[in-house]
Every structure is written in structure tokens, then in C-alpha cells.
Length: 375
Ligand SMILES: Cc1cc2nc3c(=O)[nH]c(=O)nc-3n(C[C@H](O)[C@H](O)[C@H](O)COP(=O)(O)OP(=O)(O)OC[C@H]3O[C@@H](n4cnc5c(N)ncnc54)[C@H](O)[C@@H]3O)c2cc1C
Image (cartoon, rainbow, N blue to C red; front, side):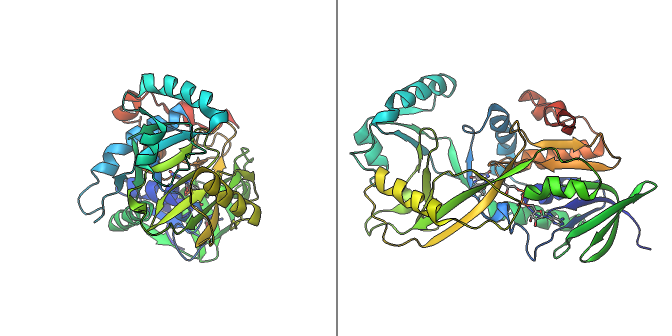
């Protein structure tokens, strides 16, 4: 009978793989991923943005803890810069002008880097903007493109270098506990583990039920993105991210094209999410409203799931319901940009360590993430 590994991680997205990276120097780790490739689901479908604003205060602080790793990763982690400054242009039409002024007043006080722009200045930064749409704007320099695939692969390489095993085509189908070991039945055979980590993304609740645990109400929501070509003469790579002030839609350069998302959030079953025609049409419509670009052809379209706990804070920690079961779920729309912090935080909690000083400096505690708040 195969010896039990210390930790089996279910899910080969950024959550599971970043945990494997930080945990593998200390414990034997096996990652079990159902698909043929890592990052097939949400982690391969993100808009690859890193920012301190948006989401919530806790997410902003997790991003701050992640920032030093991303700007100065360990030697050999990646050949590519993980963060590239993009800048974010927040815009409002006439209806939202007051709202933008209010957001700028609130955030400008906390973030002195924000710059209020005239419409002309906004158009100078983003020449595609429609002067008939934009009434007010401000610029946030603290927004970066994050190299999501390099981050994922860097973590996977590092974990393997620490003797972690990553198994694709290994769907966990059933589990039982014998004495102090979980026995997992997978499509790649039986795996025995002292501790199991549920990093199954949209399937987190469903996966917990395989272990006889209650679901915690962690719900996937579909989000869509399209890319379009811009007219000749527009240097797409030089554009900032452009974001409606309430994130009704956003757009940003993506591999020589413009990515546009209608920022949809439609509740979904866990699944291989596909874009709906209506959401694609919304994306094109927002682009045509806010800019002078006419959409004649959508080059690429996709959808992915953003999976949230009801309070929108990730769920990280040991279950109080069953021995040896650890949650790492609910990374919502920020799982890439917070992965260095979340992977390290989860590793420390798996090991039973107190959190490192940089979490405390940001006012982050283990209790904020504990699954016990829902159990
Ligand atoms: C359109 C879109 C835009 C986004 N933009 C951003 C952004 O700009 N910045 C940002 O930080 N985040 C963004 N996100 C969010 C980010 O992508 C997610 O938070 C992150 O990818 C979640 O990672 P994960 O590992 O939890 O989930 P996933 O990547 O979905 O990984 C979970 C894995 O678990 C596997 N699995 C499930 N059940 C089993 C089982 N029983 N056995 C074995 N394996 C199993 C699945 O196959 C899957 O690969 C965006 C998401 C979307 C959809």
C-alpha cells in the first residue's frame, strides 16, 4: 500500500499550486488536478490585473502582502517580470459624474497618487475614448498587468523542485477516512493523505461534500471577456486599463488586442464556463458607447467563474467539522493577484504556524479567513 503523503491538494489552479509552492519545502505534497493542464479553469481565464483598489479592504491588503514577491520573486522563479505597470483610467459618463467625484474624494485622500483629469487629458491617455461619453475621469497609476501564467508555472516548477508531485487527469471522486489518513479515490488511482486541502475553485463546496462536510455557501459567478482588434494607428499596448467608475465594464490591452469585459456576474453551477451571446453583445456595446471603436469582429471570447463566499472574503483554514480537512477557497475576482499572500498564508495555517509579520502589519489575522464563520 502506498505511503500517505502529508498533504493532498485538490485543484491545480493558482490557489492549489501557490499553496504547493509554499508548503512543499516543509511537507510532502501531492496536487490532484482533474484536467489535462494546470490553470484550465478560472486561473487561465482572468483579466490578469493587479491593483490595490477594487474588491475590498482585505483584498487590497492581501495584494500589498503579495506585491514584494511579485516585484522581486526568488531567483529562478521566472524569466519574465511578473508585474508591468499599466495604470488605470477611471471614467464616468454624465449620469455617473457625481459618483466619480465622490469616489475620487474618498480614495484621493487615502491614495495621493490618484490624478483627476480633464476630458482632454483622459483622451490624451486613451485616444480611443469617446468625447461624447466621457464627462469626468481620474488616473490611478497603481495598476499593473500580472503575468498569470508565469506565476502559475513558476509556482509549479518551484513545488516540483521541492519534490511535490503534481498529477493531472486526477479527479477526486470519493474519499473516506481511516484512522488518521484520508483515502482518496481518483481517476488516477488511490491517493492517501494525512491532510487534504480543498482548493477546488468553483467546485469547493461540491468537493467538501465528497468528504462528508457541509457546503459553506461558496458560489461561482460567470464573467465574460472578449478581445477585439483596434484600428490601425492606435498603439494598443500603450493604453491604460479603462474602467467605468463602478466597474460596469472595463477594458485593457491583451496580447496586441483590447480585452473588454461587461463585468457580468451571473450565478452558475460549477462548470467549464462558456460565454453567452448576450454578454458578448454587452461587451461590444459598452466598447462602442465609451470609445470610438466600431466592433466589426470579436477576435476571441471566453468566460470563467469567479467564486465567492457570502462575505466575499476567502475561506482559508482547517475545518472544524472533520479532522485533516483544510479549506482554501473563495478567491473571487482576485485569486491571481493575491496568490503569493494566500499561498503563504495557507501554508502557514496548514503547518499550524502563526502568520508572518507582514500579514500582521496589514492588520490581517487568521480569524478573518477561518471557515468556522460559516460552519
Ligand atoms: C473573466 C475573469 C477575470 C478575472 N480577472 C482577474 C484579475 O484581473 N485579477 C485576479 O487576481 N483575478 C482575476 N480573476 C479571478 C481569478 O481567476 C480566480 O480568483 C482564480 O483563478 C481562482 O483560482 P482557483 O485555483 O481557486 O480556481 P481554478 O483556477 O478554477 O482551479 C480549481 C481547480 O480545481 C480543479 N478541481 C475541481 N474539482 C476537482 C476534483 N474533484 N478533483 C480534482 N481537481 C478538481 C478544477 O479542475 C480546477 O482546475 C478573474 C476571473 C475571471 C473568470
